[in-house]
Image (tube, rainbow, N blue to C red; front, side):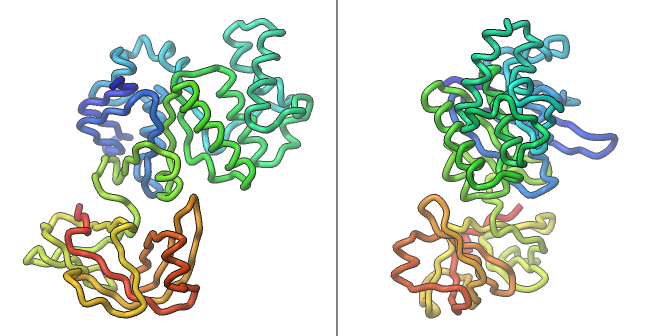
Length: 331
């Protein structure tokens, strides 16, 4: 197993505020890794560190078994492509924007034009070469920025919540490019998202980041509250959830949506947590169905399309949701 990144005892902050605290993390080369977490969790800061824009205040980063030192940052940075949520495009033609990095690296005009045109074709923008970048839609601009990254042929591609400002076509094209680069060329891909379904559909590995730390819990069905004195219950402001154990300094829980069982009637089972609620949303993505249920707190459950059809579930239906106390992660 080849390792693209190895982080050891990483700490990073702004002034007295610690933003990242990662004792140890390895990210495999040639794989797709998703970083999942809420806004402000540290996803973008970690991505900036992996692109060598930010340097940790403490700790050590190794990149493909090479230790990263301050004096070598630029050389490492050239091996990584970063696609930001709001990429900057020059007020020039589309092809000039894609060629920009190649021009800086001294690639000849003929060669960089050929490489850039090929990159545009990959992202579905063949024929856009002469257009003004300022005339593009948000999704098209994102794809031009992605083509600019592809043209540099990096070892690693990092994407910061790539679907945030994309239309459906741009999102589909971007996902196709990510999968093709990874499967056919072995490019390491790391992307951030708040969408667990997208992460599970695209990534080989999903990492959850919360308050600057990597946690073992899925960050869907994330609730804040406090643990009871006996450590057997967790009190949110609205409901009480049975847990398998916890301590007073733990303030959050999460429940993997795959561990939540939906039923039309209350189940007689060993699952200690059971709540009656109402379906408020149903989403179908990548062969799975995400159902949102209002049951004091807003829960998400993942089921198959077959289960949706068999149960005949619709928005507005009353349902029961059940899960074991051991399915609750406390942190």
